[in-house]
Length: 142
Length: 113
Image (cartoon, rainbow over all chains, first blue to last red; front, side, top):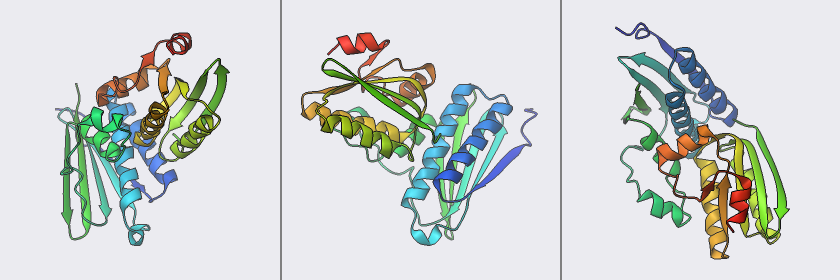
């Protein structure tokens, strides 16, 4: 059994660039201290950052004071980050990804953040219940 | 994240950009402004040295894609040199390694124009 399986690490981020940056760094630092490979830490750090920026950029103003909770857990060789936040329904897992190289060669950049997350993670799950969104990012340890 | 370094120098008809620190959603607009400033001064052939770049998020990559599109319409291009191991891995994971022409050294990139 993974000795780290009972451990979780939680941070609360305000909806501003400073908090998004510091929360992302805290998650990366926690994973590094747990001995997670640097490549996986980089992928998770970037995915969490993109997810938080996406929430910050697209959520309506009336949710601006509501913090985003980011919980990180390790179990069975899986690194899981769960992001919970109040806001409107937006399922980034259902967005159709374009033919990425052709899309970006044309200078189009819409959907780039979502592309980052869905490419870097093994699994991305989304649910919406009574105004609370939950985004679960999972990556397997090699 | 958060720290952004930028400098540029002319090498004949090519402009060499040195970018360091982070290209994230906060710093990317400044990077875009700097690159558009180079284009505004007539530059169409750019080399971007990424040896001191610690972090690149989608906003930073979006700037490179947008600027490259602008330059191509003018017959120019932005090429990348000295990409460090961390950024190279991210580009490979994302499938972006073939999106730009990437060179090991500044000289190779400058000579390629």
